Every structure is written in C-alpha cells, then in structure tokens.
Image (tube, rainbow, N blue to C red; front, side):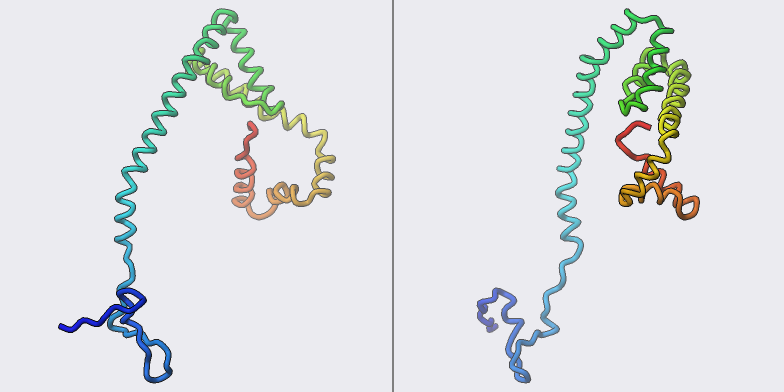
Length: 190
C-alpha cells in the first residue's frame, strides 16, 4: 500500500487539504479523530486515588499523634494541678463562671468544656456545662441591649455591613433561618 507522506502538521495534517470550491481548508468528516472520552480521566483518577488516600492517612496519623502528645504534655498536668489545688465545688464554680463570662469577653470557652468533661465525667459535666452555656449566650444579649439604638444608627451609616442584619428580617421563615445560621457560623463563641 501506498502511504501519504506526513505534512508539517504531524500525523493529522493529511486530514486538512485545500478544497476546490473556496480555496480554504476542508476537513474530511469520515477521518476526524475521536473526541477524548472520560476513560482517560477515570484512568488518571485511579492512578492518583491511592496517593491521595495515603496522604490523607498520613495527615490523619500526624494530627492524631500531635494531639496525643499535646494532650499528655499540656492537659494532663493541668488536670492534676486542678485536682490538687481546687475542691470539686470550687472547680465546678470556676468552670461555670468561665462558660458564662468568656463569650461576653470574646474568649474561647472550649477548654472549659473539655476540663468539665474530663474531671467530672459525662453526666455531672453536662449538668455544669448546660447552665453555664445558657448564661454565656444570654449575657452578651443583655450587655448589648441598652446599646441597640446606637447599633441601629451605626447600621444606617455603614449600609454594607448592616445589610446582613437587615437580611435576617426579610423573606419567609426559611430564608430568615438560613441567614441566622450563616451569621452564627463565625469565629466568635456563641
């Protein structure tokens, strides 16, 4: 058989030739190369999936190991110090106060939750944590309530920042609920 020589365009250069009608290039419909299928991409994912799984497992083990090391170096001595220096009633009052006051000062109260659970166990720790959190979420409200008119005036001066708060009052109950959920997802406690 007689093969055509390759053109300067590579192996597919012979698919394009000058047409007799308009002088422009014409493509033969029967010799167009097939489009790439998704099998090429699934093959790529099947090759990369074990690597990604290995990296995820390695990352999980490093985080788990560092958490255990941090726990044994930082939390265990703190628990021992608390047990020696405070009575259970004093410790419960301190945990309750930290859960009630830290959110108003924009401080993190998660370590207090951990200490309550570790020292007092699940049941008694739960009975200390729930009232402390209840006071912790209502105290900022009562602190901000006298300043509501000033906050509303500030909202009129800065309309871009106040638009999120105004959005909470618009729409049906589901849209209001979604807005409040997005407002609650914040780095600040409660």
